[in-house]
View (cartoon, rainbow, N blue to C red):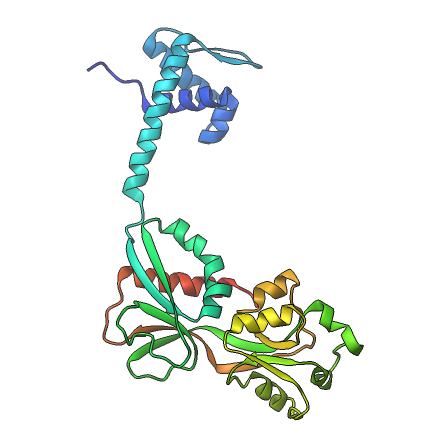
Length: 298
């Protein structure tokens, strides 16, 4: 086998030919233009013929240079693929997650693209979780995300995000009928809430008030419908710092009043089963969830 030219010289030539500039190649490879020029000359001395005509303002490959560039470009591409294949993240497999629909739609799904981009050999399956049910009763999910205050001795629960509640409404409704400047102004509007939820009762109780019997109420089983009704101007919903965050950031919803109601110890919890070893994939996903939760400012 004939002696191969130095790899650094080949890299310098490939970058120079691709960029059609020694200076641009030097910037790409984080070396000086002089170093690129020297490696280029070494390669030409190795072959015994010129590979390009170079001047301050032009860079043109010779026929031999064009042939060499076509071949080594393909070789470097194959080399990059081989190295990338060896360096791929070892985390792979399928993860089944059961979580609250509102949380999945409004917080988790918009962020999943980042997880999928990082772990290319992972497959996720999302399942809906109803409130006050055991997420592992059928033995299917690997982990779950629920809202509330888990108390089962069979579960390991880690608080993912503390909840804060506050009124939200459409910007149109904000200045309608005299505006909303104080708590009693809320009584002129329909109060939107989930079926069986006590958000509004808790809010007014914290303010030292109670809801008059004359106030109209509208209830939804699906929290997504609750916020959709608020966006449509049907009334005022009790939003929170997670599920209403995107609409607040976009201006589709606004907070008519200052202040919030801390729901401690209620919040969104990541649940796993006690006595069951979490898979490497589960551990990585849980770590990613908590990093995402920390990166979001309410």
